[in-house]
Length: 250
Image 1 (cartoon, rainbow, N blue to C red):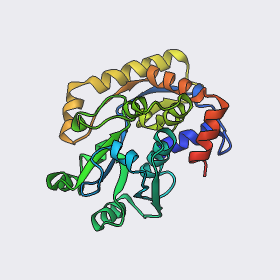
Image 2 (cartoon, rainbow, N blue to C red):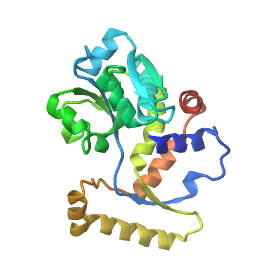
Image 3 (tube, rainbow, N blue to C red):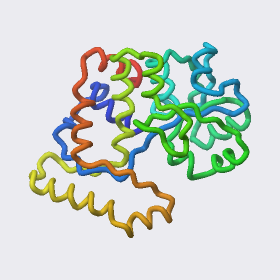
């Protein structure tokens, strides 16, 4: 989510823009860093529908305005009208996890891969400590097949187009994942060679096997896909840009 915040600073002009992301050559990414939202299982929310029906603000923990919880909460407020009481200032994600165990907060957002690959979440799942309520991907992660995506929730609650665009812009960084990129000065023929080589490398059976052994996930996106994403995200109406500034421009 930190990456998403930095991209949005470039888009909205919150910082002085020294370069145009559209002019860079995107080579590809090995994974997308989609995010999820979850609550303590003993909280009175069986689904995100319950969150909206309650009308009560959820007390969630965050480290700051670039934190996954903070940005997800702002997106849910913008697109679905959900309410949150954000407790900001925790020093780390681990501190938020401990706060959830103590009952100081009841909810959090984070990257999906991290949630399913390390403690305390592995133990939490065995004990049914937490409940997953929403996820950001275009399609449902197989490990959360019963959990709706933000797009599905926005369709259900008929979210306005301008708010959908705001969510798309803020969450774009998750689609980039950990991208490979070159400066604008690299010739197009070399960019094409780099993209082809990168795609072949990520499809190599030995690399895939080693990644699985190391509990790494490979969900690649091509350079062409990232280039198109950049054009789509950067070309937004003034109203969308102003709303993004308001949400993440602190």
